Amino acid sequence: MTARDAPNAPAVAEVVRHHRVVEAWLRGDVPYGTAAFAEFADAHAPHFTMVGPDGNTMDRAAVLRAVEAAHGSAPGLRIGITDAAVVAAEHGTYVVTYREVHDGGPEPAAARRATAVLERDGGGGRRGPRWRYLHETYENLHETYENLHETYETGR
Image (cartoon, rainbow, N blue to C red; front, side, top):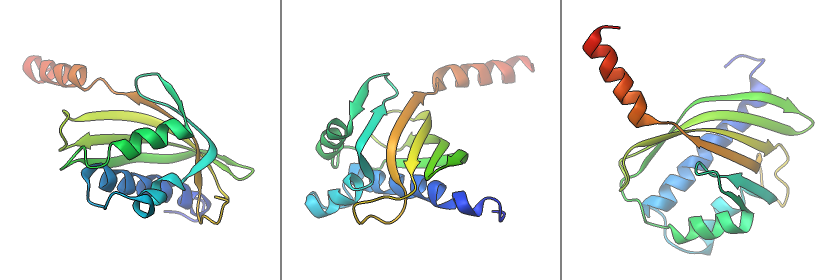
């Protein structure tokens, strides 16, 4: 990290931290209950919205319901975050892009690209950035693996 990157470090750190919380919740590594779930819920601004990788839009309440109901649904899940970068930061707002890979859970491995808008001042007594908006898009891993296999087979 360079001195130029330092002001954006909290946003990238929040993306990684948040996904550790999600991973632990979905794996069932933390107990079900208000206190355990609060760390996830409090990270989202009251006006949070999300466009999921399937293209459906959910408000904060819908996201919280879905994640709360999914407690312990993915034992063994690992969530990896790579390529995280702040692409814009202005007036207390960060725009962060990253790649998210899910592996080891009940579903086949999957990857998605995401763009998140984080508010620098978390508000509500929360320290650190708060999630304002999230847009996820699935990567086509099957196609990627097929193309890779073809490349190895043909040498192109």
